[in-house]
Amino acid sequence: MSGKDKLRKFRENESFSCLLQPATAEVLGTDYRLKGRWGKEFFRNDNPIVLELGCGKGEYTVGLAEMNPGTNYIGMDIKGARLWKGAKYVHENSVPNAAFLRTRIEFIDSVFAPGEISGIWITFADPQIGRERKRLTSPLFLERYRRVMDGNGIVHLKTDSKYLYSYTKALAVQNGLEILADTEDLYGERDDVGKELSIKTFYESHYLKMGMPINYMAFRIGDVPLKSPQWDGSALAAEHVRIKF
Image (cartoon, rainbow, N blue to C red; front, side, top):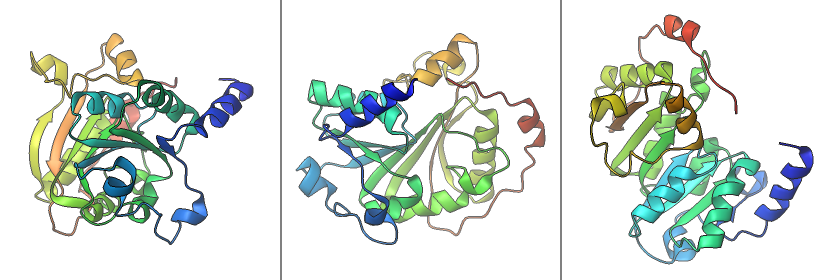
């Protein structure tokens, strides 16, 4: 993508009412103006709110919103040029229950109130090999999610990364988390994965064409203090291949 194309998308992003781009000063150490008010003031309903973290181009946020009009969906990512595609679709097609938030996931406590979120999707996130504190399923991040989720909230992880999947499963097992679904080959093990899991992101489509299996887990975080798993991912790290698009 050329620099001019990025600038064009950044300018167009400013015109999308479905895309919120708070400045750092609005979320760093302070509460964002919509914290605790997303339903009432933004979506103007009291429907559940579900997040997609690291949403990229927003395919999952849009797909889930169109499938489930009784639930509100917010895609979070820091990459404005990627968010442009999903935001443009929502804007042009008037999808009332989908929105995008350009900010760092580290600020999730600043933008959402306790219990404001009903569920979380993590789709094809960077596995952050060797950098656990940046991994979106690390204890550090899961503790953040727990603070904004209601008690029954489910975390969905869909990934091509055996490293990220294996780490997350080890963490869930060691901490006694409730695992609701678990597969190393989503499409190979199921004839019918269901409509929500059948949504395919830009990245997933490429991985499937290469014959790479898709891993999926669904779990609840619970209320116990979380510890890093006693897990050696060195072999998986050595064979890990991440394709850049």
